[in-house]
Amino acid sequence: MIAAKFAAPDVSIEQQQLAALNRLIAGIAATNVFYRRKLEAAGGLGGFESLAAFRERMPFTTKPELARDQLENPPFGSTLTYPHKTYTRYHQTSGTGGRPLAWLDTTESWQWVLDNWKVVWQKAGAGPGDAAFFAFSFGPFLGFWAAFDSAVQLGLRAIPAGGLSSLERLRFLIARRPRHLCCTPTYALRLAEVARAEAIDLRDSGVQRILVAGEPGGSVPEIRARIEQSWPGARVVDHHGMTEIGPVSYGVPEQPTLLRLMHHSYLCEVLKPDGNERVAAGETGELVLTTLGRTACPLVRYRTGDLVRPVPVSQADPADFALEGGVLGRVDDMVIVRGVNLYPSAVEAVVRGVSGVREYQVEIDKRRTLPEVTVRFEAVDHRDPSHELAKQLRATFQMRIEVEKVSPGTLPVFEMKARRWKILG
Figure (cartoon, rainbow, N blue to C red):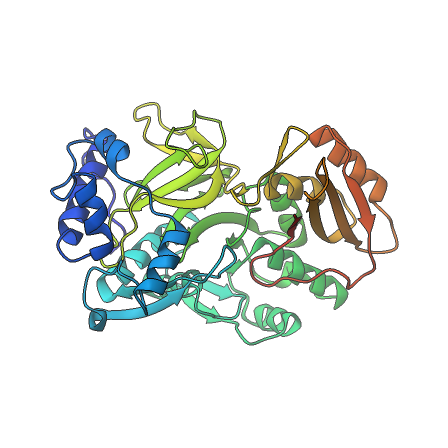
């Protein structure tokens, strides 16, 4: 069954979200130790009279808090609603933002995750009989497995390509000619680079849709254009989610700069970082999510750490908003340099807009009185785009950013989430 849409057009999104929220609370209040304490303190054990009351009284959940809970209540913490023996799926976070979190699902909660991922597939134009190629090694992160299992349930032919080199994956892909390719934006570019080196013509790949996630980029015009130029005939479709949350958003080819949120499955807020104040449309803030259907392992008012820019998409219902430019970066990664907000997707947009750059890394040295930013890069060939890159960075951010060309093979190559943001001090 596909994730349920709001059925009654005369009922607002927020009204239906409130009903779903109170159903969630009814399902977790008695046995979920972690949230029973929070709900009791907020006067919400019996539910909330309005979303305004919920936002005013219900405390946030943070990743450090969850990590601490799992340390204090091993092995899985106190956030599970049911006995451990009822859980059938194990996943864990990448640990890029601290200690990895273990996350369990029952059969029912896993199906909720899959139903949400089916929305991603369908909005990308996938359907029964299509083939989908998964260009990554399957680890404990949720996204790989959810994408794969949901594809199978939808009737797609799911092709796993773990445990292979990039060249082996390319040859495998060319032989199978899938319509859909799943990977990170960085790895889509990496595969294209290997294809050029090996004289493999990607016009023969059969790929028409490249579903990307795991890092900013799929909703950024410059990065999307670079990928689509490298894969002739393919369109990039963005998506984002988290192991502890599930699939949150989806892109559509007709509106490539927007990520649409699954408001039927999540109560979505965009707040000022470290605050409880909503940001206005078009402003940058932190995405805060409540899972409305993952009763076995819920998260309520979870501060995701993702920086986003909300924009309205419906005049009829202001609660229906999307994310312009996708996920812009992480709260922890955003730095202010000489009064300018820098975050990864903005820098990557500039770098990918300059031809001749293969790989790059950003170093921000905060140990000095005034933070200094350096962009190191490897060139595609003998050309040196240093001057053009420095010029475009200065024009975009209105400040001088050091640019340094390094030898080929100096910078790391990424298959999964790229970690190009290096902060010193």
